[in-house]
Each structure stands twice: as structure tokens, then as C-alpha cells.
Length: 330
View 1: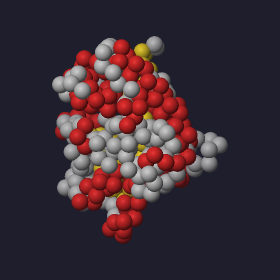
View 2: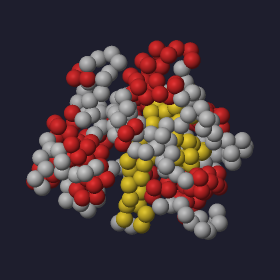
View 3: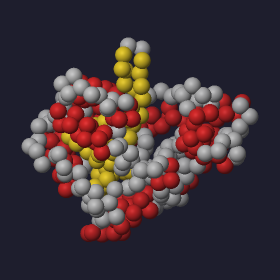
């Protein structure tokens, strides 16, 4: 493993010291270097299909030493995850609380694209961002309301209540009906599932291509924070902001050397904003893309992370196992 070349960021006036940020980064770095970790997993608290208690058992059965649940805009699965880990006891894998945020990045004036930002809290304290996450879920709910209205007007009736029922998950200690409204995140994936069940689409891909994708008649935009403000917010609350799957944004495949490489330039800019790391080992990235992101991340002085982006039945990416090794090149 190469010597650490990153510099831990701290936001003045927040109580988060550079030493704490450095320790948080070192914990993640050790997990990735040792392999047998998966730091990008989804449950049915957002757009995955696997209940959180089942996910923990899958993690343990796969021999993973460390993992993170990174549901979209919610930490609703955490009580169930923690309860299941207590059941496993001293042999439980190490758990890193996390979240995945959808944010806007302005690629040029007046033109923004959606990118995903992972927030890791290896030292704990993720509950400090819950109020902010609740606000983001509120934006999602308003988008869902508009989407249901559009689909209904197109002759494919879906109610908001019907859509939100898709997100109910069991809780370790309480009945799902006792939880505050809006903790569970639903959206276009669940809407696509409903369209398929009702016979309006052949499969989820068809539903997105015909109705739910950007520019399609059932698409409704939603308000998202900017990437820079999200990075700064996570860092100011003790989180490690990590850019997820950069190949999805078409920032890979640049034939240039590392100097002048598109992804390197973007990552250096984001590092200056406080970005801690980049997800190089993604479950749906090719070996060539992984190598390119790894080289770009190291060139930008960033922490390198690894996550399958497992969604259960909603994506093809398989959860990593004890056999997964990320040490090459680190």
C-alpha cells in the first residue's frame, strides 16, 4: 500500500478536527487495502430490494470484514442493521454508517448534471445529518407527487400512497407504521415496478425509456443540492465525502495522460472543495475503468474506496465477498 498522500480537510467552526478526519480516512483506507469489504450497499429503505437484516446476514455469509449501507437520502435502515449486528455478536463484520446523495454538478454555466456523493461516518455521528436528509426526502416526495400526477394523466394511474407503500420495511424494534413519515425513500425505480405489474411496461428499462427517464412524459425533476455544498456539509459534520462511480458521468475513457485527463482535472477541483475520496472499485465498472479511476484518484491525492453498488433485484451488480481483493495498485 502506498504512503498516504491525502490531506484531511476540516471545516472551521464545526468542531471536526483534522486529526479526526485523518483517522476516519485511515479506517476506510485500511478496509479497502485489506479487501473483503463492500462500502456501497442498498437496502429496501431506498431503491434496493433486500431488507436490511437480510443484507447483514448476506454480508456475514460472504465473509466480508467490513461493509457500509449507503441508501439514498436516508438512514432508516440503521436501527435494523445495528440490531442484526448485535445478534451476530463478536464475529460481526465492521460496519460503517453511510448514505448516498444525489446532487447537481455544474459542468458549464447553466448546465448541471446529477452525480452521486457517498458520505461515510466511520467514527459515528451520522445522525447529525438527519435533518438535512429529511429536507432532501421532502424534495423527493414532492417530485413523486408530480410524477404520479403525470402518469395518471397519461392513463396509468398511480397514487402517491401506492408508491410509498412500495418502500415499507420491517423495523427491528417497532412496527413500520410507528416510524415518522418519509423515512423510507421511494422514487422512479418503485414507480417502474408498479408500471410493470400493471402491464403498462414490459420491464423497468422499458418503463424508464418510455415514461420515467429525463425528457419522457412521466418524468418530474426534483430539487437537489449542489455538489460543493454537499461536500462541505458532510465534511463539516464528520463525514467523508466520496464521489461514487465516476464512469457513470462519462468522465472516463480519456486517452490523454494523467496531466490534462478529464477525470483527474475534475477530481483535483473537487478535492479542493473538500472531497475525501473516489470510488474506483465499482461493481459495474470494467477492469480498465477501475484502473483508470484508481490512477486518476491517486493522481488527485484522494482516498480510494470500493463498493459493489448492490441493489438486490434492482441491479445486476453482485455484492462483494471475502474473495474480493482491491490491493493491487494501492
